[in-house]
Length: 202
Image 1 (tube, rainbow, N blue to C red):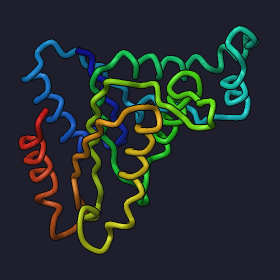
Image 2: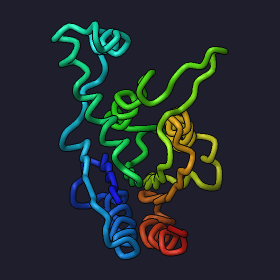
Image 3: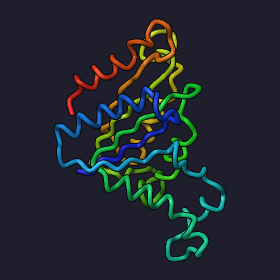
């Protein structure tokens, strides 16, 4: 079983999302000893944001691409191949300013490709092509967004769920590390998240 572990936080040694996702991966390895983990650390190897030339190359038929266009799509193709090769995806990220860090948004942009991860139907709809994947998203936030006055402010969780569904992945499980900077919850944020991992069927 192949596991793609995507890490986003630039805080390499004190990150709550990294700590909880590492714990989750260890639990998965205990249940499935044959897991082959591949780590994609977007804070250490950030993907470039898409530019006009790359987008044009995406929409050019492969057999018609110039050498420069072929080079432009290589990184996106690599990310997509990595996605297809994995049965399980563990994504760990902080919430920044209510939403996704830009390096994570760039990853979604690289793997959301017409003809590769989704296709258009004759009636104008879209069908995701990435099937049979299980996703765990470990999301750390400074404030509490699972309950209370900030629930509607959470732009991270709905985006990630819809973005995965768009390419065909519907089994998306959210693990919240809620309130890491809130004086009332910061001490319990990581322990509570780890407890939720222990209670989660995997």
